Length: 226
Image 1 (cartoon, one colour):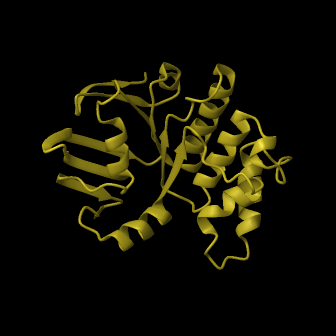
Image 2 (cartoon, one colour):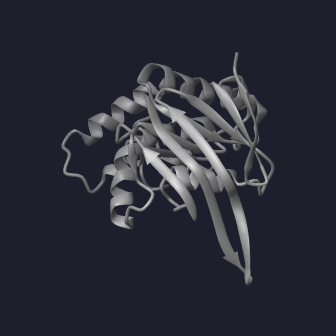
């Protein structure tokens, strides 16, 4: 099942009186349960593409189809609601709240929901990512890998169909990075969640189904894991 179908995506920005074209006609599809990496040099458009896929930015031209629905022209409120229901985000620097423990950090995307099972769901997710003994630990009591696992659990709290990760191993040592990538692979395989990782880390390509290379805002080549 195709969860994202981005067609002829162009993104332009006005800066200093000039127009910068960050994406120059990208076609990108993502299937349920697929793990894809996006690579390219700085300035190639990786983060811009991730923002478009995550409904954080609207393309200048082109269409974004999410679960069979054209979402390109949705207003901010509808985009926010759809993003919350459908997409989880994982960032390089975790962005955990320092005064909250692990369970509370995982709950953050649902803090305004009247859901009596929210904490139980957070504890279940933390257990599934190997942090069943860290419920009450604050971020300063966790290692880098543990913080990233909390961030992964947080990204899953709303049962998303898609997880978008921006440099998810960038702040981690090699062994911890492998553990996090193992977790992403498990989530994709066992839970049928589609995952896109924007990265400079070649290690990621050992775990993904395919790698998309961006060059100057266009797709240069695509490698499929055999």
